Image (cartoon, rainbow over all chains, first blue to last red):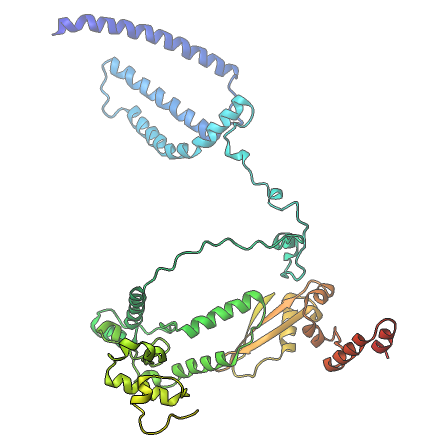
Length: 349
Length: 107
């Protein structure tokens, strides 16, 4: 085995010798240049200087070790090893800093080489605030300004063009596709959500949950329509700096909503959780009882000759009640006028 | 321009003059360019919310404020002829042509 390796080893050693010669020649040339002062580093980055020095020290220690090893000494407990480890750790710590500075160093180098900024440099795309002001329209500054020394910023606030025509916004109409069933479903979902946050359910939750009881001065969980409208009105007033007038109807609504919440109504009347239990709702959102729509039959039914015979007795009686209330035209011919009101003459309204 | 929140527990609604005095102290201007209006006390008392405007100069104020607010400061006088009188005069003017109109308008 050793015999086959011998010629390889000899060639390797020869290569090594040649390479060592070239390296020493280069290093000697470099040292001459540095000693002559060809690479001034006072104005450079100190970070890079530190790195340079550390790398040089590392190399020196390494070569010391190699020398010792080549002359047959052991490396155990060698002083140079400790120094090497120290320098290595410092270099590792420097590496993230290096990463962060990489972009800037590259740009500096490029600038130094080419003499100007490259085309894709983002620094070339500075904002130009003078381009943002419209040069066509005349400036009509707002007079009543925010005080406290903000008067310099008045130019930015409202640059209104005097001769600008109002162009209404182009809105695309969307097809209204909601069916009655979908509307019902939405209403049911909303009622469910409202029922979940009602007092009954909340008390049940407190009873069965292990979490500690929280006593909070929170806002009303039910944002009623009235409170939402009030909030909307307040926002409008404060942003437009005007006071809106309240109509009588609005006043009545507000009074009713306040009365509802301020009475002891909430102690005895629990909110409607029929959405969760099934069944129809008795009260709608604003605590008004839901009225059932009565079907008022149309007057024109009696003119449909064939169908009129299929009317039930009850419906016929209902129709007559309606007729007796309204003005009756004595000249109208209908089987009803003759059949159902036989006795007395038809009444003139 | 600003929205003003006044907290006055136990007292009645604060008059506008006092509020404008306070604003004079806060913003170090004169009282004649401060206009406050629209004070509404919340239910239960103690808190009032209103709106206010402070102008940079009296000229700006005269140009931009509505006339009724200027009248409250004494900077504007509205005419005290009734609208009925004015309409009657105008209708009388309509019947006549030429110089006679002037005579009817300024009797």
